Image (tube, rainbow, N blue to C red; front, side, top):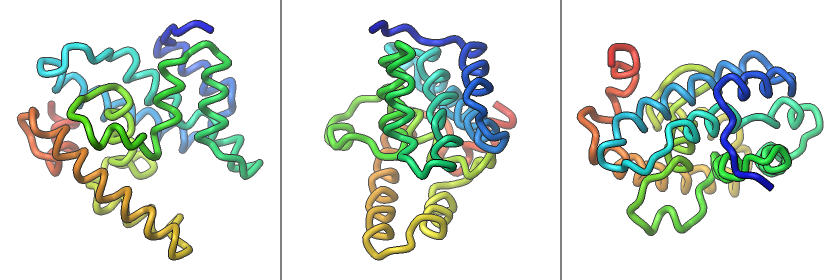
Length: 185
């Protein structure tokens, strides 16, 4: 297995090859835009960030979602395996954690590509950049149908708020200004 990172062009080809629905493609492009903006704003504090990996992870984070909408499969697990089979191990790590980070991320003070894509995904509903409150309201309405699901989404919201504080600690703009920063930054 190799651990290369696909270029933006290669990711776009893969998105087409796997018949990614237009709205999922638009969402992924916007997640990449947000993740790259954050990464580029944080690079002076975290010089080890790999912007090519951020972009590839964001573009491919939902690579299996179209298929899984048809098959009812788990787009996280299937996407991780698809990307691993392509030889993109570091991208597969991002795909595997774009919905929920491994617990270790909440107990250590580091920033990496996995965190940036995870957080960026939480700031984009369809292709619109929104705040966390709006995103999690959407998640509750869409997926919080059972008490257990609603509780899991609320726990993820609280964890993501903590991650947001960590991300914005070194940024020159607050979370609520992200959309304006993207539009004018």
